[in-house]
Image 1 (cartoon, helix red, strand yellow):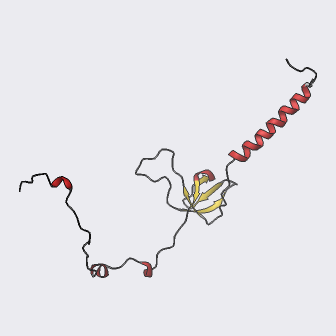
Image 2: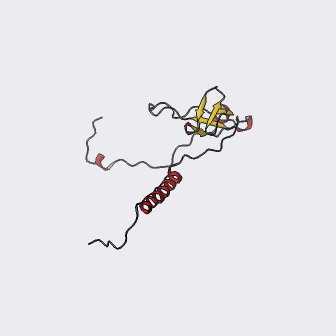
Image 3: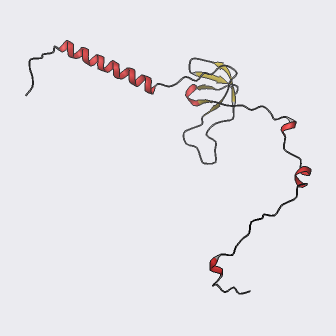
Length: 134
């Protein structure tokens, strides 16, 4: 049944177990480890809110500026609160639109003529055998 010619000592078994565990640990660490965001002081971020939010509420706060870096993964924002990196997401902050990019005034919008559609509308087939009372 079993080949007993190969005998392995207890020390060799322990060494094999340690090698397998180290290999498994390194794989798990590379796949599951948290990723560092490249955040610097002066960047804008949004804070992820609580896990349970209602439909009408936003999942993230408005953009906040990073004031200080407390440690590798914690940052102080301009509102004075300190947040862990896992709750932060980089935010894109757009500049204030200039007057040249503003919406057209009402006078220019109303000067356009409303054009009627050229599409022909056919009556439904069921109207042909249906009696309308007017």
